[in-house]
Image 1 (cartoon, one colour):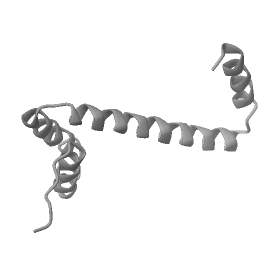
Image 2 (tube, one colour; image 1 turned 90 degrees about the vertical axis):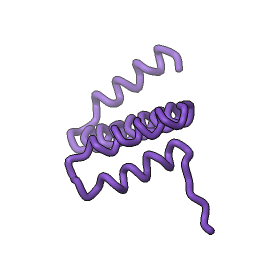
Image 3 (tube, rainbow, N blue to C red; image 1 turned 45 degrees about the horizontal axis):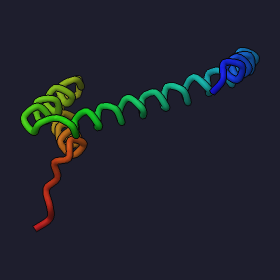
Image 4 (cartoon, rainbow, N blue to C red; image 1 turned 180 degrees about the horizontal axis):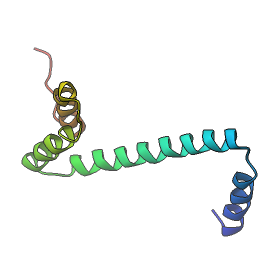
Length: 87
């Protein structure tokens, strides 16, 4: 994207109403969170198994909801590429 296009978008964003700006900010936050999660998963997939498990444990322990830790741990392991096959 050219700098002129970025400047034009900045002017358009600046002209938004507060409600539109709040909506835009929410959309931007969602996009940034999705990009960060995709980067986290890509990094996990490139790690050796032991490092991926340690990273999944650390990620799961970031939550203050103790009941959510097992689910987050399982999600972290799945994101790293670990998956149990049905028997």
